[in-house]
Image (cartoon, rainbow, N blue to C red; front, top):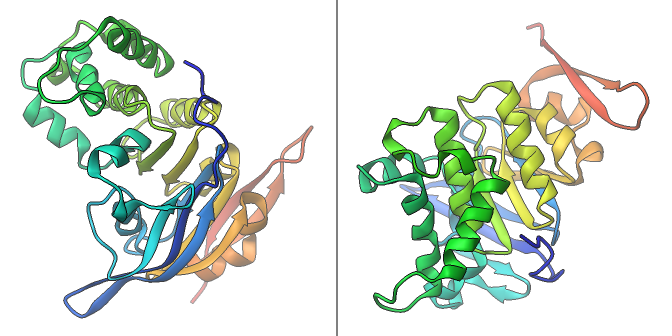
Length: 270
């Protein structure tokens, strides 16, 4: 799979995005660009608006104000099928949806469904589709699961398959909403290592700030629905920023033999 096939583009841009529900602003005038071909971490406390913001990009929630554009084109002005060919999603609710829709189906069949966005009507899958699916499973380290039933997989195995399904869609932009939740640390690291190696535009909502530092190029920090800061990840996820956004004391540590940093946390005294 050639990760550079989609071209550099401009990236995914949120421009003054606002979402209101029941008189409350869940996302309030958020604006930043996730650069093309790089991985952007979307971080913030629970309830900060991360999932809501991502949903405006994959057209599950229409912004009440502002715009979401991909490579300069407003995603909400494009045909839905065209958006599906350009933006793939690995969402928190995806596993439940696939569990329900895919009862009794094999992993191969589940991933092959992603190719439907490239067909019209009931046209059959092609050998080229199958090739994309097989390579996507291999990229997600899930090739050995192809003939297994999706329902019988472990949580971590299902996440691998859902990643393969997103890759098989063939989109140049990936949106991942807390894909590492409930996974062991080894697979959390492996999943983000895979995403980083794709060379695609990716926005990943994560809780673990050290995973963001290790595997993401940029970061955008949300708090109470508003954008606090955005930019290169090591310039954004600083001790001071973490204290202000998350309410914990953070200490920055530099890893031996390189320029990478990590954070250690302590509870703030009252």
